[in-house]
Image (cartoon, rainbow, N blue to C red; front, side, top):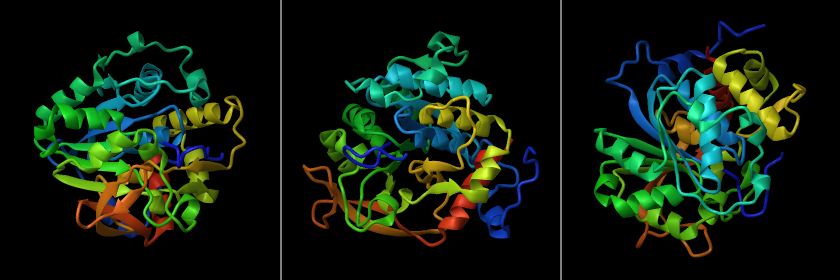
Length: 332
């Protein structure tokens, strides 16, 4: 995900991870089982901005969540599927199916992780590859009692799902990194037309007007403030765990220096907050707002025509979230 129209975002192994007591109490299940894990379908434009890769790793390391499908959205979706599939291989998650979503025209400059996939073909993946990602999404929804769909890219795939199976929408919990209510990048005041919405406004309008079982978003107001630096970034950098290593390899490729390790901070990790909202709202001020997407791509409050969304509007403790994120990413 990118934050807006033509703006491009700037740019010893940790075996025992120290966590704050409240972090352990609120976010770590003692013995997570299949019965109490939430079933997650992730729709991602992985391979444009690097935050999708961090979000995928965060999802895979969440004991509260079970990933039942990853679908790729917008542009060259086969290229995105290669990144997702190789990431799943590197993190020992080849049981997770990958669905290739709807394609669109996008400039090659947005394929900044291509170098990480030059030695990998989709046919190398020992798990399942679905070349009709929308049908795979439908099948996954039909086979799950209480599915959660997390969208962290432009909403083309999700809109097609809504169009094909509105009956399944009503049983699906929807979470997205989308929109801007009152703030933009790094807490600057003022709403903007956010990237995931702006890339296909009619698709976003269809998704925001759909009859979801529940609907939650992290707009730029909250997700555009998440950067790991200092001790938080060093924790990830020193973890030497499968997820952390795969993220760092991709991050360095994305930065254009795959053989160097001199970076000291992440980029803005917008999409990770959508993953977090699948199992917690701790450290966030949530507000129910009736929202529409207007014809310019802005997410607007509209009490007459809008659908109710649970909106992560402000941080109550951003530092606690960043510690939690670094801990989770670093897990072996």
